[in-house]
Every structure is written in structure tokens, then in C-alpha cells.
Amino acid sequence: MEQSPTLRANMKSSSNPAPVKQEDQEDQFFWSYTEEPHRSRRMAIIKAHPEILKLCGPEPLTIPLVLAVVGLQCTCAYLLSNTPFWSWRFWLTAYIIGATANQNLFLAIHEISHNLAFKSGLANRLLAIVANLPIGIPYSASFRPYHLTHHKSLGVDGLDTDLPTAFEAFFLDSIAGKAFFCTFQILFYALRPMMVYQIPLTKIHALNIVVQLLFDYVLIQSWGGKAVGYFILSSFLAGSLHPVAGHFIAEHYVFDRASIENKQARDAKNRIPVPETFSYYGPLNLLTYNVGLHNEHHDFPAIPWTRLWKVNEIAKDFYQDLPYHRSWVGVVWQFIMDKEVGLWCRVKRKEGGRKVGAWKEEEIQN
Image (cartoon, rainbow, N blue to C red; front, side, top):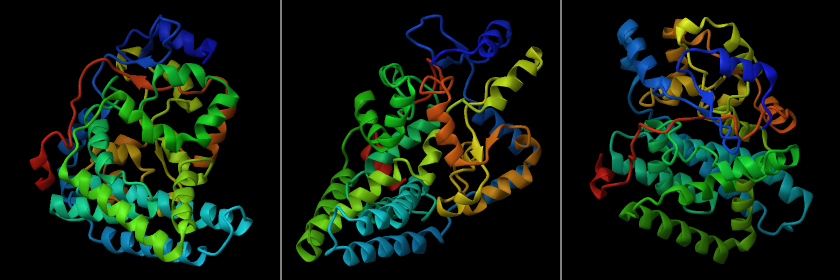
């Protein structure tokens, strides 16, 4: 990604420890030498608004919603079982209903990974396996440790698998490359973690795999291969050029033009780093467990989706000046078409964080 004159000037003139670009031209990520911002903001919010901690805890409404969406997807799979795969009816249903539903299930698993459906850790793991069924490929057990590490190690190179690698950023640094990334980003998010580091396999991983394969086998035997094909196509489209897939890019890429321009205007003595998490306040949150409230979620991952709006209301003074997105579709369009935006636009740090989630078998019970 080519740096703009404004961006270069910002990086050279700032005297604070905010993220700066490394001199190595082969590595153009924003490198930060401060801790991730969410822990310090969380402590400041708790100090100013201690009542916010009352919002923490499970949200039982997640359970029937998961079951309803799983039922919806199974109904669609059954109704399409005799429909040709290469037909407008099959693909349109998969794009409009299937992709939206499976993105909803991706984000249900995201909620459940924080133990926000049941109080019991094991019950949450089992519900995640149920939510995984219409996705077609077992992944819920593996998602949890990688995602929890993302929270504890935000931006840490070699730990946060949400970060693109330098290899990806270099080879996809063009409009065509970014369009390819956005089209196939679900594959990047599925395969990249295994390339960064391997997680230990546990009994819950084995259960996730066995249940999913058995479910797929029964489905094929009962309704034919097109039913499973519908599930997998829905999952692919959910992470492709689809409105709800915009959240993958919107959450942590530093490309909001207001963020870059405003950074120059800020007093360097304030020592305010470049924002590295962005919220989205728009209607698609209704379909995605409020994942758009991403600053709020990273600040308080123990608060469920139904109460994240209250975080913003209670601590409005902490969020009102943070840059945010109004459109996930607009995010994807700008990401692809703006030559100053790309996979390099992520904040990275060399140190800090830790691996969490599945490193001990007994953590299943926590």
C-alpha cells in the first residue's frame, strides 16, 4: 500500500508512542509500542461507571435464537434438496437467506465462545456445536481458543490470527488482490490460524468433528448432497461479497479517512494512539448479535449482545469521539477501491498477550 503524504507526515511528526510504520519497505503495518487500548479504557470506564459491571453475564435469549436459525437453515436445505445446484433459485436462496443465517450463526458461536449463553462452560461448548451444524464444516471448538487469544493478544504478531500476514498484504496489495481477498475472505480466516500456530486438540474438538460429520452424513442420506451443498455455499457466501461480511474488515482495519486526518490535528502531547478497533452503528447489527458494537465488545467481552448498547449509553463520554462506521457495504467498497487502504492497514505489536482458551483440557469446565 502506498502511503499518502498526510500519513507520512503524521508518522514523522508525532512524538508520542502511537503506532508508526516500520522503515522496512517490505513491512508497512502500523507498529505500536503501547499496550492495546481496551484494557485501559475498560478500567477507566469501571472507575467512572462501576454500575456497568451489572451488565455482565449470560443472555438466555441466545439459546432459542440459535435453535430457530438452525431450524430455518434445515428447512431451506430440505426445500432445495431437489433444486439444481447451478440455478438462480438455489444461489439466490443461499445468498439472501443462507449467507445471512450462517453469518448469524458464526456470530452466535462468537457470543457463545465468551460463555454468554449459559453459565456452564460445557453447556456453551455444546450449544456452539449445535450452532455449527448448518455451517457444514466443524469449526466451533477451534474458533474459541483462537478468538479468546485475539482478545487477550490484540494486534500481537504471531498470536492474533485475525491479523493478515505480510505475505497476504504484499501479494494482495492491488484492487484485484483486495477484491479477491473480500471474495474469499472466509477461507483466509479459516486457514490463516493454522498457519500461524496450532492449537492442541481436545475432547470437545473431537466431539465437534464427530457430531458435524454424522449430521452431514445423515443429511446426505436423507435429503441428498445438495442439502449439505446448500450449507457450505451459505457459509462461503456469508464470508464473501455480502453486506454482513463487511464486519470482518470494519472491525480492526485502520482506513477510516477521518481517523487518519484527525490524527494530524490531535495534540501530540495527548499521546493518543491511532484507533485500532472500530464500531459500526447501523441496522445490520440486528442480524449479527450487535457485533458492530466492536469497541464496546472488546472493552467488555463479558457483556452479551443484548446489553452492549447500554455500555455505549452509560459510558457515552468514552465512545462519542471514537471513529466509527455507518455502512459495512461502504467499508468493503472503500477497502477494495481506495489505493491507500489495504491489508497493510492494521496495527501490530511485537509483545504482550497470551494464548488462551484450549491449552488445558480442564478449561472446558470453566
